[in-house]
Image (cartoon, rainbow, N blue to C red; front, side):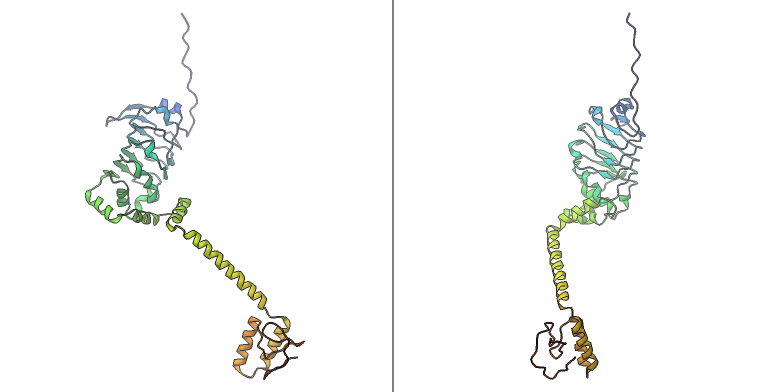
Length: 299
Protein backbone atom coordinates (compact mmCIF):
# COMPACT_ATOMS: atom_id res chain seq x y z
CA UNK A 1 0.00 0.00 0.00
CA UNK A 2 1.44 3.32 -1.00
CA UNK A 3 2.40 5.71 1.78
CA UNK A 4 0.04 8.70 2.09
CA UNK A 5 1.82 12.04 2.01
CA UNK A 6 0.77 14.88 4.33
CA UNK A 7 -0.79 17.91 2.62
CA UNK A 8 1.69 20.51 1.51
CA UNK A 9 1.82 23.54 3.82
CA UNK A 10 0.20 26.68 2.50
CA UNK A 11 2.47 29.51 1.41
CA UNK A 12 3.24 32.41 3.70
CA UNK A 13 0.58 35.03 4.09
CA UNK A 14 1.62 38.45 2.84
CA UNK A 15 0.56 41.18 5.27
CA UNK A 16 -1.45 43.96 3.63
CA UNK A 17 -1.96 42.07 0.34
CA UNK A 18 -5.14 40.62 -1.03
CA UNK A 19 -3.63 37.46 -2.46
CA UNK A 20 -5.25 34.47 -4.12
CA UNK A 21 -4.07 32.36 -1.18
CA UNK A 22 -5.86 34.69 1.28
CA UNK A 23 -9.03 34.47 -0.79
CA UNK A 24 -8.93 30.66 -0.76
CA UNK A 25 -8.47 30.61 3.02
CA UNK A 26 -11.17 33.12 3.90
CA UNK A 27 -14.63 32.11 5.20
CA UNK A 28 -17.37 31.68 2.63
CA UNK A 29 -21.02 31.35 3.61
CA UNK A 30 -24.64 32.15 2.83
CA UNK A 31 -25.58 35.44 4.49
CA UNK A 32 -28.85 36.20 6.23
CA UNK A 33 -30.16 37.89 3.07
CA UNK A 34 -29.37 34.80 1.01
CA UNK A 35 -26.21 36.23 -0.57
CA UNK A 36 -23.26 33.90 -1.04
CA UNK A 37 -20.55 35.95 0.67
CA UNK A 38 -16.80 35.88 1.25
CA UNK A 39 -15.40 37.40 4.44
CA UNK A 40 -12.16 39.35 3.88
CA UNK A 41 -12.50 41.59 6.93
CA UNK A 42 -9.62 42.81 9.07
CA UNK A 43 -6.66 41.74 6.95
CA UNK A 44 -4.94 45.16 6.69
CA UNK A 45 -5.51 45.06 2.92
CA UNK A 46 -4.33 48.26 1.23
CA UNK A 47 -5.53 47.68 -2.34
CA UNK A 48 -8.21 45.68 -4.10
CA UNK A 49 -6.50 43.07 -6.29
CA UNK A 50 -6.55 39.42 -7.32
CA UNK A 51 -10.33 39.12 -6.98
CA UNK A 52 -10.29 37.06 -10.15
CA UNK A 53 -9.49 34.20 -7.78
CA UNK A 54 -13.10 34.33 -6.59
CA UNK A 55 -14.15 33.13 -10.05
CA UNK A 56 -17.26 35.32 -9.93
CA UNK A 57 -18.88 33.01 -7.38
CA UNK A 58 -20.03 35.57 -4.82
CA UNK A 59 -23.02 37.86 -4.49
CA UNK A 60 -21.31 39.79 -1.70
CA UNK A 61 -17.72 40.63 -0.81
CA UNK A 62 -16.94 41.93 2.68
CA UNK A 63 -13.75 44.02 2.75
CA UNK A 64 -14.57 45.91 5.94
CA UNK A 65 -11.96 46.93 8.54
CA UNK A 66 -8.99 47.06 6.17
CA UNK A 67 -6.77 49.90 4.90
CA UNK A 68 -8.11 50.28 1.32
CA UNK A 69 -7.65 53.81 -0.09
CA UNK A 70 -9.27 53.51 -3.54
CA UNK A 71 -12.26 51.66 -4.96
CA UNK A 72 -10.83 50.04 -8.08
CA UNK A 73 -8.89 46.97 -9.22
CA UNK A 74 -11.89 44.76 -9.97
CA UNK A 75 -11.97 42.05 -12.60
CA UNK A 76 -15.31 41.35 -14.23
CA UNK A 77 -17.56 40.22 -11.40
CA UNK A 78 -20.96 40.13 -13.08
CA UNK A 79 -22.58 38.37 -10.14
CA UNK A 80 -21.49 40.83 -7.43
CA UNK A 81 -24.47 42.67 -5.90
CA UNK A 82 -23.08 43.88 -2.58
CA UNK A 83 -19.72 45.42 -1.64
CA UNK A 84 -18.91 46.20 1.99
CA UNK A 85 -16.04 48.67 2.48
CA UNK A 86 -16.85 50.28 5.82
CA UNK A 87 -14.01 51.28 8.15
CA UNK A 88 -11.30 51.68 5.51
CA UNK A 89 -9.38 54.71 4.22
CA UNK A 90 -11.18 55.18 0.92
CA UNK A 91 -10.74 58.66 -0.54
CA UNK A 92 -11.17 57.95 -4.25
CA UNK A 93 -13.57 56.00 -6.43
CA UNK A 94 -12.36 54.92 -9.86
CA UNK A 95 -14.35 55.63 -13.01
CA UNK A 96 -15.62 52.85 -15.24
CA UNK A 97 -16.79 50.54 -12.45
CA UNK A 98 -19.91 49.71 -14.46
CA UNK A 99 -17.74 47.65 -16.80
CA UNK A 100 -16.56 45.34 -14.02
CA UNK A 101 -19.32 45.29 -11.40
CA UNK A 102 -22.46 46.21 -13.39
CA UNK A 103 -24.87 44.35 -11.09
CA UNK A 104 -23.85 46.17 -7.90
CA UNK A 105 -26.92 47.13 -5.86
CA UNK A 106 -25.44 47.92 -2.44
CA UNK A 107 -22.25 49.82 -1.62
CA UNK A 108 -21.35 50.50 2.02
CA UNK A 109 -18.60 53.11 2.46
CA UNK A 110 -19.33 54.04 6.07
CA UNK A 111 -16.41 55.62 7.98
CA UNK A 112 -14.02 56.39 5.16
CA UNK A 113 -12.27 59.54 3.86
CA UNK A 114 -14.32 60.80 0.93
CA UNK A 115 -14.06 64.59 1.09
CA UNK A 116 -15.65 66.23 -1.94
CA UNK A 117 -18.94 65.94 -3.78
CA UNK A 118 -17.23 65.32 -7.12
CA UNK A 119 -15.58 62.23 -5.60
CA UNK A 120 -19.03 60.60 -5.71
CA UNK A 121 -19.56 61.23 -9.43
CA UNK A 122 -18.06 57.91 -10.66
CA UNK A 123 -20.91 56.04 -8.93
CA UNK A 124 -23.42 57.62 -11.33
CA UNK A 125 -22.65 54.98 -13.98
CA UNK A 126 -23.69 52.09 -11.70
CA UNK A 127 -27.22 51.87 -13.05
CA UNK A 128 -28.43 49.26 -10.52
CA UNK A 129 -27.08 50.91 -7.37
CA UNK A 130 -29.97 51.31 -4.91
CA UNK A 131 -28.35 51.31 -1.45
CA UNK A 132 -25.42 53.57 -0.59
CA UNK A 133 -23.86 54.60 2.70
CA UNK A 134 -21.35 57.43 3.02
CA UNK A 135 -22.05 57.93 6.70
CA UNK A 136 -18.98 59.02 8.63
CA UNK A 137 -17.24 60.57 5.61
CA UNK A 138 -16.22 64.28 5.57
CA UNK A 139 -18.32 64.79 2.42
CA UNK A 140 -21.47 64.66 4.56
CA UNK A 141 -20.67 68.15 5.89
CA UNK A 142 -20.84 69.73 2.42
CA UNK A 143 -23.84 71.94 1.61
CA UNK A 144 -26.72 70.05 -0.05
CA UNK A 145 -24.77 66.79 0.19
CA UNK A 146 -27.80 64.54 0.29
CA UNK A 147 -29.59 66.30 -2.57
CA UNK A 148 -26.43 66.19 -4.69
CA UNK A 149 -26.04 62.43 -4.24
CA UNK A 150 -29.72 61.87 -5.03
CA UNK A 151 -29.41 63.95 -8.20
CA UNK A 152 -26.41 61.90 -9.32
CA UNK A 153 -27.98 58.54 -8.49
CA UNK A 154 -31.66 58.77 -9.45
CA UNK A 155 -32.28 55.04 -8.85
CA UNK A 156 -31.07 55.28 -5.24
CA UNK A 157 -33.63 54.02 -2.71
CA UNK A 158 -31.66 54.25 0.54
CA UNK A 159 -28.89 56.75 1.36
CA UNK A 160 -27.02 56.54 4.67
CA UNK A 161 -29.61 54.02 5.93
CA UNK A 162 -32.46 56.49 5.33
CA UNK A 163 -35.07 56.01 2.65
CA UNK A 164 -34.94 58.52 -0.18
CA UNK A 165 -38.27 60.35 -0.24
CA UNK A 166 -40.03 61.72 -3.28
CA UNK A 167 -39.84 65.27 -1.95
CA UNK A 168 -36.06 64.88 -1.80
CA UNK A 169 -36.01 63.76 -5.41
CA UNK A 170 -38.07 66.79 -6.39
CA UNK A 171 -35.81 69.14 -4.43
CA UNK A 172 -32.70 67.58 -5.96
CA UNK A 173 -34.17 67.92 -9.45
CA UNK A 174 -35.02 71.58 -8.82
CA UNK A 175 -31.63 72.43 -7.34
CA UNK A 176 -29.55 70.49 -9.82
CA UNK A 177 -31.66 70.78 -12.93
CA UNK A 178 -28.65 70.81 -15.24
CA UNK A 179 -25.20 69.30 -15.43
CA UNK A 180 -23.75 72.81 -15.25
CA UNK A 181 -25.45 73.39 -11.89
CA UNK A 182 -24.05 70.13 -10.53
CA UNK A 183 -20.54 70.98 -11.72
CA UNK A 184 -20.70 74.48 -10.27
CA UNK A 185 -21.94 73.24 -6.90
CA UNK A 186 -19.41 70.41 -6.71
CA UNK A 187 -16.52 72.76 -7.55
CA UNK A 188 -17.37 74.90 -4.52
CA UNK A 189 -16.62 71.96 -2.23
CA UNK A 190 -13.10 71.43 -3.55
CA UNK A 191 -10.38 71.42 -0.89
CA UNK A 192 -7.01 72.94 -1.93
CA UNK A 193 -5.09 69.84 -0.84
CA UNK A 194 -7.42 67.33 -2.50
CA UNK A 195 -7.23 66.29 -6.12
CA UNK A 196 -5.66 69.51 -7.32
CA UNK A 197 -4.74 68.18 -10.74
CA UNK A 198 -8.33 67.13 -11.46
CA UNK A 199 -9.67 70.50 -10.37
CA UNK A 200 -7.19 72.32 -12.61
CA UNK A 201 -8.21 70.15 -15.55
CA UNK A 202 -11.90 70.81 -14.81
CA UNK A 203 -11.25 74.56 -14.65
CA UNK A 204 -9.49 74.40 -18.01
CA UNK A 205 -12.49 72.62 -19.58
CA UNK A 206 -14.93 75.11 -18.08
CA UNK A 207 -13.00 78.08 -19.39
CA UNK A 208 -12.70 76.68 -22.90
CA UNK A 209 -10.15 78.75 -24.78
CA UNK A 210 -9.65 81.09 -21.83
CA UNK A 211 -6.23 79.67 -21.11
CA UNK A 212 -5.01 80.49 -24.60
CA UNK A 213 -6.49 83.97 -24.41
CA UNK A 214 -4.89 84.47 -21.00
CA UNK A 215 -1.53 83.37 -22.38
CA UNK A 216 -1.86 85.85 -25.26
CA UNK A 217 -2.76 88.63 -22.83
CA UNK A 218 0.26 87.84 -20.70
CA UNK A 219 2.53 87.96 -23.74
CA UNK A 220 1.06 91.32 -24.73
CA UNK A 221 1.54 92.65 -21.22
CA UNK A 222 5.12 91.38 -21.11
CA UNK A 223 5.84 93.09 -24.43
CA UNK A 224 4.41 96.36 -23.11
CA UNK A 225 6.54 96.17 -19.99
CA UNK A 226 9.64 95.45 -22.03
CA UNK A 227 8.83 98.38 -24.34
CA UNK A 228 8.38 100.69 -21.37
CA UNK A 229 11.65 99.55 -19.87
CA UNK A 230 13.45 100.17 -23.16
CA UNK A 231 11.90 103.63 -23.44
CA UNK A 232 12.90 104.45 -19.90
CA UNK A 233 16.45 103.37 -20.60
CA UNK A 234 16.55 105.52 -23.76
CA UNK A 235 15.12 108.58 -22.02
CA UNK A 236 17.34 108.40 -18.94
CA UNK A 237 19.08 111.83 -18.55
CA UNK A 238 22.79 112.05 -19.06
CA UNK A 239 25.11 113.52 -16.43
CA UNK A 240 25.39 116.79 -18.41
CA UNK A 241 21.61 117.06 -18.71
CA UNK A 242 21.12 116.49 -14.99
CA UNK A 243 23.60 119.24 -14.16
CA UNK A 244 21.87 121.59 -16.56
CA UNK A 245 18.40 120.87 -15.17
CA UNK A 246 19.49 121.25 -11.54
CA UNK A 247 21.14 124.56 -12.35
CA UNK A 248 17.99 125.73 -14.11
CA UNK A 249 15.88 124.75 -11.07
CA UNK A 250 18.15 126.82 -8.85
CA UNK A 251 17.67 129.85 -11.12
CA UNK A 252 13.93 129.39 -11.75
CA UNK A 253 11.73 132.39 -11.00
CA UNK A 254 8.28 130.79 -10.72
CA UNK A 255 6.75 127.63 -9.23
CA UNK A 256 5.57 126.58 -12.68
CA UNK A 257 9.11 126.64 -14.04
CA UNK A 258 10.33 124.54 -11.09
CA UNK A 259 7.61 121.92 -11.68
CA UNK A 260 8.43 121.72 -15.39
CA UNK A 261 12.12 121.33 -14.68
CA UNK A 262 11.53 118.63 -12.04
CA UNK A 263 9.45 116.74 -14.56
CA UNK A 264 12.25 117.08 -17.08
CA UNK A 265 14.67 115.70 -14.50
CA UNK A 266 12.49 112.59 -14.13
CA UNK A 267 11.97 111.95 -17.85
CA UNK A 268 15.28 113.16 -19.27
CA UNK A 269 13.56 115.37 -21.85
CA UNK A 270 15.02 118.83 -21.53
CA UNK A 271 13.01 121.92 -22.45
CA UNK A 272 14.35 123.73 -25.52
CA UNK A 273 15.34 126.69 -23.36
CA UNK A 274 18.03 124.70 -21.55
CA UNK A 275 21.40 124.20 -23.21
CA UNK A 276 24.06 121.87 -21.91
CA UNK A 277 27.78 122.42 -22.21
CA UNK A 278 29.19 121.85 -25.66
CA UNK A 279 26.23 123.40 -27.47
CA UNK A 280 23.76 120.48 -26.88
CA UNK A 281 20.17 121.30 -25.99
CA UNK A 282 17.06 119.80 -24.47
CA UNK A 283 14.52 117.44 -25.97
CA UNK A 284 16.73 114.47 -25.10
CA UNK A 285 18.61 114.71 -28.40
CA UNK A 286 21.47 117.10 -27.47
CA UNK A 287 21.33 118.63 -30.97
CA UNK A 288 22.99 122.03 -31.68
CA UNK A 289 20.79 125.04 -31.43
CA UNK A 290 21.75 128.17 -33.29
CA UNK A 291 19.79 130.46 -31.00
CA UNK A 292 18.15 130.51 -27.56
CA UNK A 293 14.90 132.44 -27.34
CA UNK A 294 13.95 133.90 -23.99
CA UNK A 295 15.70 131.13 -22.04
CA UNK A 296 18.43 130.79 -19.56
CA UNK A 297 21.88 129.52 -20.47
CA UNK A 298 23.89 127.27 -18.25
CA UNK A 299 27.71 127.00 -18.42
